[in-house]
Length: 207
Image: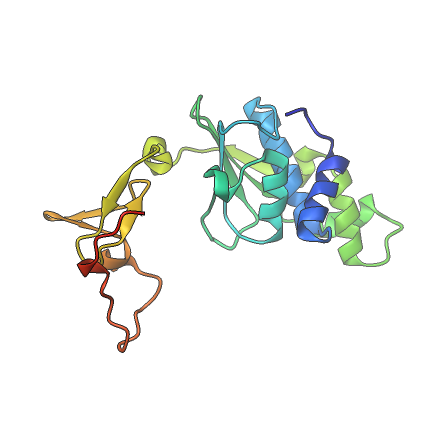
């Protein structure tokens, strides 16, 4: 995939998101800068780059367009810390860099877009012109989860001993001699309603 200009990537992000906003600009700039720091040609054509984004929404769309990392390709993950930040991991070299905007850029943006009518527009235009070294902060980091475990491998499957649901990508939890899904291991983000008793454990289905 050939290298794309900032304007081209912003057009693609705007088409995907149905409008262009300052956080998309930041996402695209962060993705492009990650390519420079890691020495990778982005957007990627394969799956070498893994990106962990610390918020959902507009920034994630901009990053996805700039890197060609997507949830559906298992190259984009969301760890929702509510931060405009992301860690970009070269899965071959194992280098990882975390990038986030500098805290003062909102107040700095108008000086890069003096003809704009309001703060939002100043950020939209200004973020496109502020140089990387002023716009973005970055640092080399190491992941706390083993990279191979994070990525897993194709075809990894297990069945939860409690609910009977299939688990893929090595996300099962071992409890004694039982294999559990994260929900049955006590990490569920939902609670089953009392009148709807799950019967999945009694079913054995191949799909």
